[in-house]
Image (cartoon, rainbow, N blue to C red; front, side):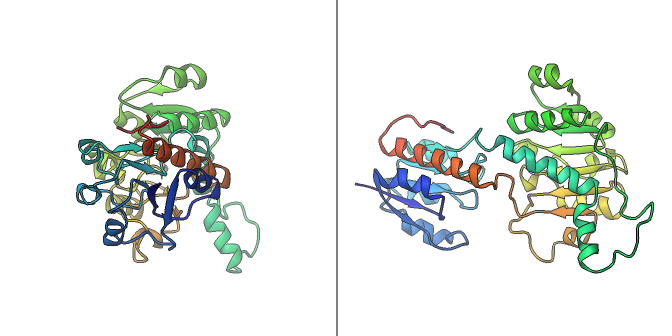
Amino acid sequence: MHRVYVTRQIPEEGMRIIREVAEAEVWPGELPPPYEELRSRIVDCDGLLCLLTDRIDAELVANAPRLKVVSQLAVGYDNVDVGACTARGIRVGNTPGVLTETTADLAFALIMATARRIVESDRIVRAGLWRTWSPLFMAGVDVHHAVIGIVGMGRIGFEVARRAHGFQMTILYADERPNPAAESEFGASRVPLAELLTRSDFVTIHTPLMPETTHLIGIRELSLMKPSAILVNSARGPIVDQRALYDALVAGKIAGAGLDVFEKEPVPNDEPLLRLDNVVVLPHIGSASVATRTKMAIIAARNLVAGLKGEALPHPVN
């Protein structure tokens, strides 16, 4: 029987699929298995189901001579050395598509929460600081009819555009490739990134993390944004230069930020951004609905099983 290692507890619907064809060992901890622990655990394994918090590098796969498949329970796979896996004939899969709308919901929730100062207002009420109604008390900015700039018009960016269209927003997007569907359905306009940053009231990031997108939003880019603008990142933390973002927020160069991702995760307690009232911070929960995480577990399990059988993965990366 095949042997597989699962680096975290996942929904039972996924585990049932795996157990039908393999003997599965599951890391029991809430935190990821330490690298050396993971390295030793997969020495005799045929398959690995991992998360984006696990480092799957060339050294690790070289230490697992029986490994046939690496199944990532996530869309992004920047934590996996796909080249090293490919060189050793190891299939790599991910879970695209299924989390698109759930993640788009979260991105738009960050837009709304930041614009209308939802979290800040909640803190004031709980602290007993709400004393009366007044015209300027906790006044935020409107989302409806504003200009939204979507950086990356892939699946998730497209669904964010759909939601923005419902709010009658003017939709700009920056992408290497045009998206005719977004243009025809939502009236979206493809513009250079610099123009998008200059014109947008809200800038939301939906591009994958690659060498060319690391710190895509830095000092120069933030300086182009309106002082009233809000930046939202629910893609990957390193796409935004956090130090530059902090400086821009403190200096009033932009008005606020909504962040579901950070350059280092979990975010350290001493991260300066956590001290700012005009920043909404979340613990990387973009796809965190019960239904979506269950669907992701099923897809990851099916990728894993296909790889164990030497079949084409339903959702291959390599």
